[in-house]
Amino acid sequence: MSNLYKLALIIKKNSSSSSSSSKEDEQFLLIKQTRPPKFNDEEYDSFVDSDLYDLPCVQLNPLETDTNSDILIQGADVCQNNLDLTKFDVNSALNQVLSQVGCFQDGEWEFWKYVEEPEFGPRSFVHTVFITGKKLKLQFHDSLQDVYKWMSIKSCLDLLLEVKPSSDRVGPLMAVGIVNDSVQTGWCKVPSTLRCQEYPPGVKLVPMGSRTGKPFTTTNLVIVAPDTPDRVLDGYGDKDFAAYGDALIIDPGCLSQFHEELAEIVTALPRKLVVFVTHHHYDHVDGLSVVQKCNPDAILLAHENTMKRIGKDTPTRPHPKVRVSRFSPSDQALEKSWKIAILMKDFSDNWSRVYTTISGAEEICIAGQQLKFVFAPGHTDGHMAILHASSHSLIVGDHCVGNRRNRESSILKAIESGATTLFDIVAKTYSDVDRSVWIHASSNVRLHVDYLAQQHKLPKGFSLENFNRSCAEFVDKMGSVQSQMRAS
Ligand SMILES: [Zn+2]
Image (tube, rainbow, N blue to C red; front, side, top):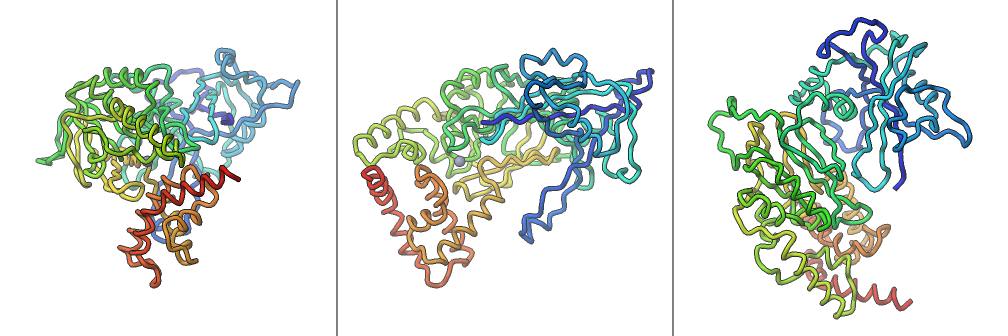
């Protein structure tokens, strides 16, 4: 994974004046962020988005060899073990970022913070250096007035915690760089060996090493643990919540080498704990037994179709994902992988105690905060998302609407160009993807075809009966393809 460096600026209003105003009154410069591009989907593009403001930030590029940056960043040596700022072109980064609002004439810069973003994705690992200006002389262009805003920590916190349709939103750099430091972190202790991101405050994302699909290596564990538990349920009336708790964890799926850290997190959380899994895939449920062991009183919530597949008894057949990663046409190897699957299942995703099935639209109450389930089938038939009501944060698990729409249209294209069997559709739709993921992809294709049939979107000549029959032959066909590949 490659490293990407960024420089973020913390510029306080009146930084040139020597009289230090109180912390609450301090205002910071935030820049309006570029909106995401249109999706070319009428319904999707019709949704109105509010403006997102965040700290000014640009990419920081390394200098040519044997040159050193001539800009002095006071105190930067404290992060030298992680990153040597003198080896980076801070000058052009500064000019570039300040040209977004005006220009910078004079002043000093001081090191504020160095943050390594948790390992969310396979592409690049983002390192951000936050620096703050002192005695700055800044000139703002009048024409760019609607591009920036001065905001206090208090107003940012309000916008982060209580999102309203018409109000501005505050980005993650402001939260990670400044706002989170002013919020007391009580309940949720994440071991220092793990990196996490808290955005919005009270919702922590911890990517944990998991048995996920390539090229990813981690699955996000989400912890909702409000720091100031507000147990007064005013405003919720007589609402019938599906569950109550003081904290919530979502998708505790991780490899066994992270079970100790998971146990540490769960033990530090309040006893009244609610656990929710978005779907049954191993990378989301591995570790459920660890949660249960640390807190036998925890309540598990999942869709019925997910619950059916989580190990309550010894499984009679392995999870498809295990077969994907260890697939081999040889019976002996397959047998072995089945045994491993059963073994893993015994200690990883077993849940023997209280659970509640949910089907969507139910609400739960976590330390006075309201969260709502959203049924989102597609990735699996029992997939659920959950909405954190006050911050308008939707935790989507593996269900991403944009991906789903793209995939749906490419599946339909494959069918329209003559593919009739599950194997043919998978081969056409996933031709650019490693064959080791085809078995897993095939269950996705089946769900899409079912959905397309329900929507009457399949072409007239397409026989659903033939297609369903072809599903049984899929694994054999994969096996023969793999042995042909091995022989050639
Ligand atoms: Zn999944």
